[in-house]
Image (tube, rainbow, N blue to C red):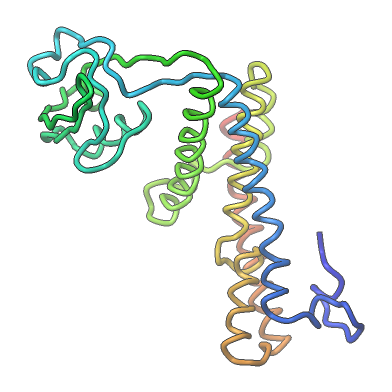
Length: 267
């Protein structure tokens, strides 16, 4: 949605360019924030309805890996790993990956008391594992909301981490997906769960990406507004237009390249 006076400066009252800088920043932020909030709400509802409720309580120790985790017992609830609080099985998996096979310091709840123990992940061809299976908690309102809340936090954080990895070079442009690839994924969704999950991913990713400080995106517009606030006067209209045009051109070229790669992958 384009506001009156956002693209071209006009002199009429109520136009975008006549509003104060904080108001204009709020208006530009609104679109991305709505997408982010919508994605988070959809994912939370989906997660709470599914009630996966996978805890950090040890249900079984796999015998072939028991030597490395001999201090861990069935019934232990893992509370911390290397000083980091864990609430979900995915939190445990993250800490195992970060450990790179080195010793990990755990704080577990055992018989109502907290104890500090040490374990060493076991190496597989695909990475490292701890060698345990964890409990799934009962599906009730309290558990569903608790695990859905932390799962949603984890999901939201992972989207931000993935976008960060693009700029750090850990994810290559060839691995990115554009409208064509997304359409193909929608077609291949298996049931309502997959469709709603994909919807939340797209909405959240779109919102976060749109707020990146890149010209032609809302985040780039916010940067220009901040510069205007610091200078106490707007940038020259021609300069601003040149910056936005450059950013728009680069985004179009990137979109065309990603669409080309999507077509090759599909066909």
